[in-house]
Length: 522
Ligand SMILES: Nc1nc2c(ncn2[C@@H]2O[C@H](COP(=O)(O)OP(=O)(O)OP(=O)(O)O)[C@@H](O)[C@H]2O)c(=O)[nH]1
Ligand SMILES: *[C@@H]1O[C@H](CO)[C@@H](O)[C@H](O)[C@H]1NC(C)=O
Ligand SMILES: [Mg+2]
Image (cartoon, rainbow, N blue to C red; front, top):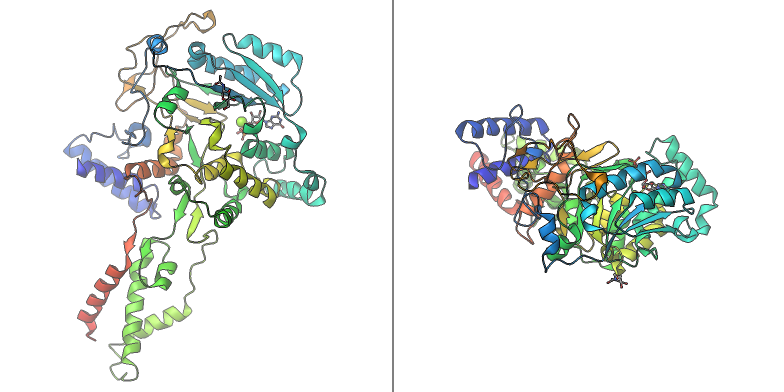
């Protein structure tokens, strides 16, 4: 079992390492080896010797799907301990998007809300038209619906910003530089609103929990239990379905301001912070210079050897007739004089944003993960920095980093069993082997199913009655490095989570010195 876990970790770590090809080769050899020896218990079939995440068991002691498979919803709802939560869907949208809005509603109603009847809140920066409201209301049969308009102050940039030349120039400039959506003023407003203001809207303040939706969203599986209730029961505060890296040029200064905020406010970070940061403290040594110089493990041995050789050389001082013995020391001295410390541009106080973020167009969360003193002042700080218009900070990275100021990894839940697509990105789980135990029950004629050719159940599947689109990229496999960090961290014991191993610099120095003395004497 230990061996299996080791192999698993090696496989997972491969996504992170710099020498990708080496790692793929290692993974290849290991996988072939494993397949020949025995079928490892955590993974299904390999493709070309490589097992994609989507075929692995990603459950850890600390997080995994709430149920192994489908639940009998009728019994679930009748269970006396079940309590419907104080929760609502929220969708920000425009009148013009009606058709896509209806697609989303139909999908979530069919796959979940026909049984649970949670209300909806629709928000817009201009009033919704009569026609829009009527069509939406007709599509939502068993739940309350509210339509809200966002106030000018919540939607627009502050008045001392929005009329300035700098503001318009910054937006134009982002367009010229090809930053995705960077030249759309409305997109900046949307990101700012979702970053720090949606939860302040009077219609949202009436709830404790929300589930964010967007137009043109598709659910592939049945969600046969209540995610709000399960999160409540399991002490989870924020749930995601997709985690991917952000485009660098949308957020070049977000982390700089975040670090500055943390320092000014003396924020005590949650362990979730580790999911979003690269920690450069990978070499622990009494030698502060070495510690600061070494940013990755591969550099460490050479740097330590250099130090030893130079030290020995200087020790010998002028008795340099043994010039041959000292060649190594002299060469190192020359190299050191020439070498510059690597500048890692985005390393601030030993850390860097790794660009990972929960894709925020899907979120199931408590409103108070944002509506609290720390997050609110974080948003205020970001607002004052101007990053929502000088750059194109998305609400997704802002949420993720902002959450990690206060939350621990255990407060977050990966809804791996929820099949979800928005725009071109999708996650669709394999069905659980037992997923056909309970059959689909509906009383609503709109959702009667004629064709129930669900995907076949598979090992380590967790989906319920999923029908996944064929030949579409699974995000767990195509953008694995962020989910990989998530899994690695959750495999660690609470309080000891780290993405990278820390090298014992003092011990390394001792060994290198020993070797040196053996070879050259002192
Ligand atoms: N009322 C209103 N809603 C907006 C506006 N801009 C964006 N939205 C909504 O905000 C949400 C996110 O906007 P999108 O344009 O879909 O942004 P995105 O999801 O990051 O980008 P895509 O990947 O292209 O979908 C969607 O629900 C939009 O309907 C706006 O100017 N007014
Ligand atoms: C739901 O939560 C909100 C916000 O905390 C609260 O104001 C409201 O009274 C709650 N509603 C119910 C029905 O408990
Ligand atoms: Mg969208």
